[in-house]
Length: 176
Image (tube, rainbow, N blue to C red; front, side, top):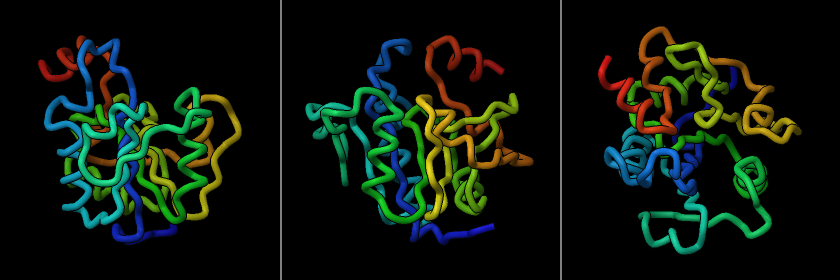
């Protein structure tokens, strides 16, 4: 396994979606992007980039904020662009990783690279941990971009790797 210290990573927070299925901007829910930035800093990650989507969202976030280039029409395009722009290991974190905590993030950072499995054993590619030498897959889906990364099963805390696209998922999860 190729372990990188947290200081070597760039955390890439994905906060550019429209959140139309959720009915409100996920990047602002439950402490939003700022909560994730704080987690990254607590884990020792110094380089944090928030991908905000359109130019008009840049002012919504603190720190280094990148709007998507005009030629990027969908998330796989944005991820390919990020891999061209950032050298070194990358830890992706979607803004709807509402349950992610410091222990879960540290486990990802120490994994040596991979895609975490949530509590349903489903791969969560938007939480991919990409070593410095990682080469993206060539497919057109987010899953296919990270299919060369191993699945990472965590003994405890798998619930923390869930993400939420619809309000009903959030209600179901937090009523358990």
